[in-house]
Image (cartoon, rainbow, N blue to C red; front, top):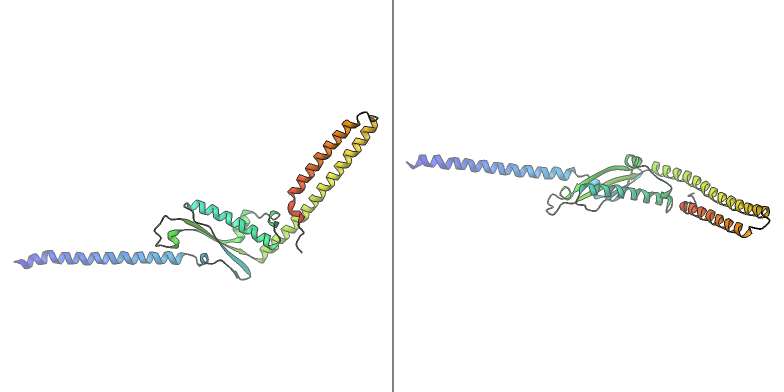
Amino acid sequence: MNLPRFDKFILPAALGLVLGLSILLGSSQRLNAQDEATNTALPTWIEKDQWREDGEDIVVLRTEGFLLRSHAALALVDLVRKKVREEIDVLVHAGASELVSLPEAYVEAHLVQDEIILGSKDLDPSFAEREKYFGFAKLHFSDAFREMVDQRYQRNFRTGRLTWSGVLGTAALGWLAVVWAYLRLDMMTRHFYSRRLQTVAIVLAVVILATAVAALLSLGPLWHDPPG
């Protein structure tokens, strides 16, 4: 009398247990596969710093951690700009980047080989704290880039030197014009307004000097000698 009851309740329970274990093992295998896929999907270059490959200098940049992905992306853009300026200063001399302005489109198309924003869980699946985002960029500086920087710097340097000389020449002509006008007017008025004319001449001379100094200060990098 008990055998039918045993077959009726124990056998289904055993089948349910086997089915549950199968589902559990399958889920574990899927999770492990996902973790492996995530780890293999990460580019290997993010773990490097700097190396040379096929005649090009490869540099990897990494931002600090940010709570928002957008902040990490903005920080990465600023980091790339700073690195490009540093590279120009190294190629030419300190401050040369002020004379070589590269468009953002050129930097993105020719210098940034790859860039990515990764979260803490992307870098380490076992990360359990509050997730942060890191920006990575892979830059490559080739000989073509160096030649372009040198050509653009030389061109802008020569143009700036001409502007620098023009400012000095204009200031000198302005002073001569003030002196000539003072002497001419002083003779025409038979020295009756000498003091007033002197005051006006001094004011004009100071204005010309201040304008020339301001213009020369804006051309500060031109005080350096060009390379080569």
